[in-house]
Image (cartoon, rainbow, N blue to C red):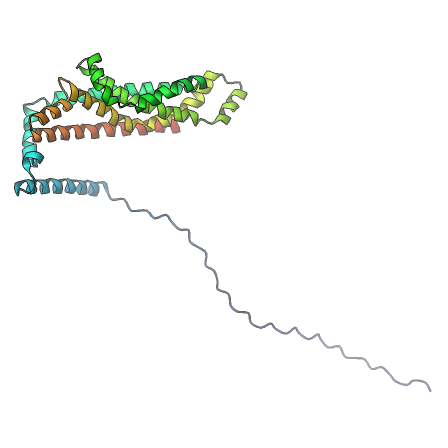
Length: 294
C-alpha cells in the first residue's frame, strides 16, 4: 500500500531570547583627578614685611637697653643703644663719618670691579688653549689656597698705607673666585654647538664672541654678590693694618681705646654701606641677566 502519511508543516517559532545575565557588581565611577597645585605660601604685602622687620629691630634694641640698665649684661663690654646713638650723633656731626665711609666705599668698589674684570678675563682666556689652562690651573689653585689676609702686611709695605693697598687686597680676594667660576663656565660650553659653528665656516674668534662669551656670562654674573663681600673684607682688613681713613681704622682705634659704643657705630655704618652695595650689585645682576636672555 502506498504510504499515506502526510508531513504536516512545523510551525516556525522565534528563537528563544538569551537569558539575561545576572546583574554584575556595580563598579565605582572614577572621578577625574584634579591637578594638584604646588603648595605656595601667600606673600605678604611689602608694608607688612617692613613693619615686621622694624618691630624685630626695635624689640631687639629695647631688650638690649633694658638688659644693660638692669645689669643683666655688662654695658662696659656690650655698651647699650642709648650710648651708641649718642656716639653716632657725635660721629656724624663732629667726626669724620662721611670721609671714612667714602674711603671704604671707594676702595671696595675699585677692588670689586678690578678683581671681577681681571678674573673673568683670565677665566675666558683658558678657552683658547687647553695646554695654557693646564699649566696655569695649579698656580691659580695654589693662590686660592693661600690666605690672602696673611699677605696683607706685605701688600701694605709694597703699595703703602694709602688707597692703593686696600684696592690691592680687595682685588686679590676677588680675582681668584672670578677666575675659577668663569673657567667652570668655559668648561661647560656645549661642544656640539662649537662643532656646528665651525662646520658653518665660523672662525675661532667668532665662536668665542658668539658662543663662549654669552654662555659664560651668567657664570660671571652669579659671582658678583660674593665678590662685593670679599672686596669689602679686603678693604677693612687693609684699614685694620694701617690706614689714615676708613671704617676699619675707626673700629681698630675704638677697640684699642675700649670705646665699645664707637665700635658699634662703625659697625652700623659699615652694615648700612654693605646693604647699599648689595642692592646695587643685585640691580646690576638683574640688568645683565636681562640682556643675556634677550
